[in-house]
Structures are given as structure tokens and as C-alpha cells.
Image (tube, rainbow, N blue to C red):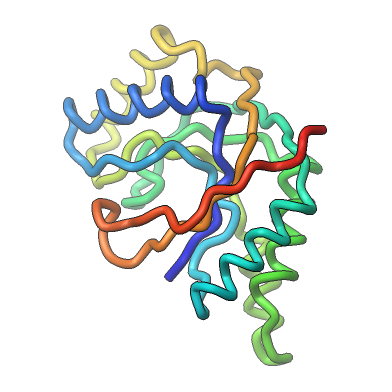
Length: 183
């Protein structure tokens, strides 16, 4: 399986990576690069996927997303995360990605409609199955200490990654990272 990740500007990426590292050190869970998953569960020939990623990146301009809130769920990959406001820029990127990467036969179109409607833009800060009590404490601490997680803060998206997401996060690999056009 492959995934498409929207990548924050390098300075913000470094700050978010430090936060992910600190949470992993303190509460367990794997390390991973800060990202917003645009599309997951992509299958296909890697060279074709690289070409499609190039086409997608060439159709996208850099944009900012806005932090809505810190949140957590009882899901491994959405254990603790920054919920991102759903904007026209993200919706447009998602529509283009779906059109490029998920050209499916007619029976699959209903599944894709459901897949698109379930999209929740977020930037994970911790993977795992920690208790809600632990995550509530983390949320309180981070809201005080970390400016990047405050409501309304903008995170600049400057590049797109194609990631090989086979197996656990420790085995994920970046296949290519492409800059988005200046806008």
C-alpha cells in the first residue's frame, strides 16, 4: 500500500517532528514524519504512482491549512492529532488525487464516494492505543506549551510525498517528495 502525504513547510515540520519525538519518548508509539494524509490505501505499480504523484504536484499550489483543535480517538493511527479545518484547497487536492489515483471500474465508484465522504484532515502527533485519560492530560499540556497546536494557527503545505506504507510505521519509506508550485 502507498499513501500521499501533504507535507508542512520545513521549519514547521521540524517543530512538529520534535513534538512527535517527545510524545513517543514519553508515551510510547512509533516515530513518523509529520504529515496530513491526502490519500491512503493506494495500490499499483510504483513507477506509475511516481508519475501520477508528479502530475498531482504540478496541478497543486502551496497553501495553508488552519488548526481547528487537538483531538484524540481510540484508533491506532488517529490516537492523538491536530484536527485541520476542511478548506477548499484541501478538498480540491483530494478531488484531483482521487481522480488521478483511483480510476476504478464502475462497481468501485460507490466505495470511492464513501471513501471521500469519510475524509477527516488531520496531522497525527502520536500513534498507539493510549488511554483517553492519558490523551486528555497530553492535550492539556500541549495546548499550553505548543503554539503550532493552537486553534487558528496556520500550517503551510509546501510539498507532496508518495510513501510506501507497507507494514508498521517503522518500515514506511518515502518514495518521492515533490514541491508544490508557489502560489
